[in-house]
Length: 406
Image (cartoon, rainbow, N blue to C red):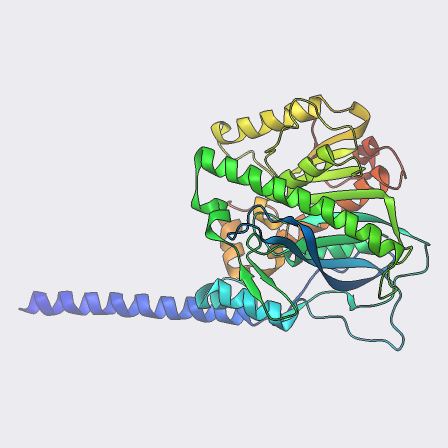
């Protein structure tokens, strides 16, 4: 009987210790959740404006919409070199309230409260609907595409920094393919399950990824058509004559990188592009790319060769068939696949500290974003503006973490 009581006390003490540990852990996560987070300050000379647009295509259908015949529709985010508002005004919110609430509902209570920062406390560096800077008569246009179903605003740091260097950066979300899309009329449309690459595997996953990349690429071409109309006659007057559509580029992360690869292969209006850690999914391997193009990779040295070899072979096939003076292949030592976005700053610091302590994560997220920003702006300065040959990146990018591949 005495041994039973002793065992009961031990179990009770152990259970209490577990409860206390869980409570303390959740308390730490909650405190971290409520902290304010300021995104990196843009490094270029221009202030940054941001505006939004909605484009409805009266002709073409969305091939991946659940209901056949559904017309293509895009919610568009535009970051651009801005005139500083007078009188001075505060920076815009990271996300409009309607978007923030929809994203939080979609994430669910645990992920919302214990897996990321409070989005209402994220501070960005753009002015809402500001006028376009008059320092230049017009600015090159660069499209930005996120990974998988990620909201394009998850890459606000990259967009703001590039805009501050004199580019109009255009990203968009699409119904049934983005995690959620929120329209001004109140519609909130979530990703359709059949468009979720995480729900399939193997050949099915590759096939779905290719279909998504094809659809997103077609969207970029459509968006470029719309920008042509905007440049001719913008109802707001903001962008009329301000878009240099002879200098169009694109960059994307993960599936977005595969999308950009396809766009720059298929649409001759693309003059330069960057695939950030994305597996090629189209028919570019047999031909390569004629325009300046960069593969920017995270650190895959710790992954098995069985996992990385096919990806590297795909990239090598395209790279070798591209003109030597127009191709760049670079990796960032210690960089992680999921830390090219704002998530590098918004993920919980206690968790990141543990990952770094265990050697699972080697490069601090904010540092990875800083390096990525510098590489992107320098590449487009060379590839679109013609500041220098793209091969000059080997000299211009001096970060010790950066490794150029041959």
